[in-house]
Length: 413
Picture 1 (cartoon, helix red, strand yellow):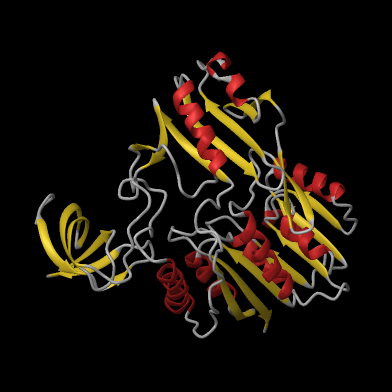
Picture 2 (cartoon, rainbow, N blue to C red; picture 1 turned 180 degrees about the horizontal axis):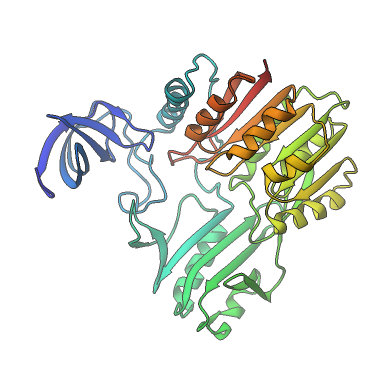
């Protein structure tokens, strides 16, 4: 077999990226935009040892779970993976995916609960990073080829309106990326242009962007052109300051649900100390503070810690403090004794030092918030001698993509 060859195959299963899986002789074939049970004609796009990647040429037997994608860019753009699935099928796929990953990598079963659905499967994102190469768009599936976008259905209308303004009214020379953040609570928008040194601020159509905050980023330096260098967003009873470089969940409504799940499983009675690791702007810690004795947040991003301190003051919270630094290194030095440890690490999960310090601290309970079930399963395995998994609650934070958030509750053995 060679590139561009065509085959007719039947899809047996879906992989963890939402691709169809088929088999042909000794080859495993991964097919984007194919569902279980479908008979499809495919064209080979990549061959590596006994693995083939392919695209659909024609669907010969259509699954009843298939829906027509509302997005004209779905087959090329790398942003969405599951727009060809009904939403109920998406939820079932993600729930089963978490179960399969936990069984395969953590060797645990019967701990995954039903997934928490998303009420708004479109228009839910509060942040987007557009790639720029003369045109504005997103990278294609598994490529650095830019797919020009006129509208993204995962974004609120106002972000698409400003995308149109930029596309039609701006000289994009020397612009690398354009980031937008949107606060629904305060109806405010931030636009950050990541540019090279040759970029001139006069390229920005300032009058047409007058209702937004506009910043220019040259390497690590941020220059305010219009408005402020932050947004405010309300989550539950709290108001949070979000700077351009600070981590903030991209789905504001589901974020509130996610944090409520953490609070509901925390077991806090106002007598316990809480350690909030990878705390970002302090969102989870502040949610827990109302039922905790004291909260200590640790975060390596200086900008996020500054926002967290501002958020503490803004929300009049007196029982929370923050330390800036590498999680494992700060834990080695801190004397804080927690009854509960909450971790919300990046996609790569916990590093060795953080794992060893969590074991050493030996808190009665750990709640692990994860955006990658594979690294979650790996870390569960690394903690298994000390901690037992009580429950895992998947949350659909990223509808129409294969990504899934999880809340994992672990108790000391």
